Image (tube, rainbow, N blue to C red):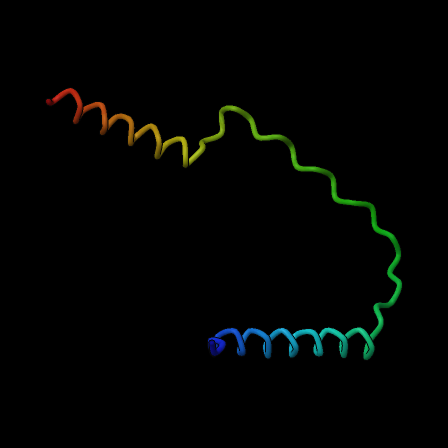
Length: 71
């Protein structure tokens, strides 16, 4: 069986990206930067913040209940 052209394309693309990465590593080694302390973690979300997905689910449940009650 013949290979799909897409497979040939993907293999060629992988070799190009591998060559580009190797050239970048050889061309410019990363300079040493002083260690910076990590950013402080963001505060945990409070339970009173609005959750858009919870709003969507609640709206869906309201609509579904209205439809069930009409039958």
